[in-house]
Length: 115
Length: 113
Image 1 (tube, chains in turn orange, red):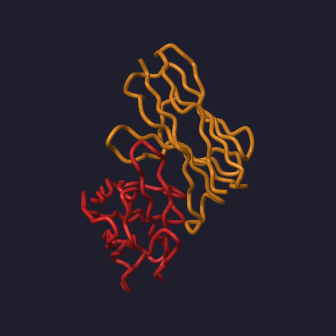
Image 2 (image 1 turned 90 degrees about the vertical axis):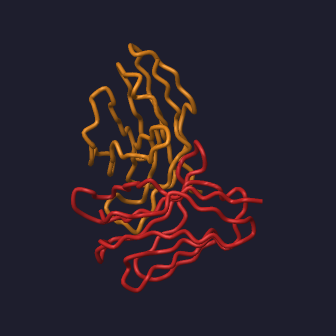
């Protein structure tokens, strides 16, 4: 099983709302990732968690707050977003962060619209 | 991570082999070549990866040149469902890019009936 699940599939939120995106995997992977993909652009890395600790933050604005409560779950808390934050948010996981021989598996994404 | 160069688009007839090229002339010895594809509005799907040797799995074959400066992804019998953006990515094990996948613009493959 190489499934990464993400909820919700679609989310519409106002600029003053607080919402969360959720990601789950049951492959025993110890690295989890958040990517952001704008329309007609390739995915871009936002955050990496390794063994439940934040390993990489690609200078993401603080209105995005990641959380890894356990090795299977990854959340992305959203607060005071801007319309330009509208995008497809992708979660991925891999066995380990640092070993390039391990592939990353992606979830289907959450389509976020900020109004 | 080494930079990759791919043609922006390619066409292929259904049932024929699709050969997608990728140049990575600055690749170093510990960097892997990865291929992913993304069908419209879905998450990227892992296809195959390799270091030096050619690789084959149930989806595709990966041919890496001896000098490792380029590679070709081969879909042996393309179907309409293979229409997607195909990303060639070079992935390193260390440095500031630790574990990171850096996606380029990719090749949009259209499979025609």
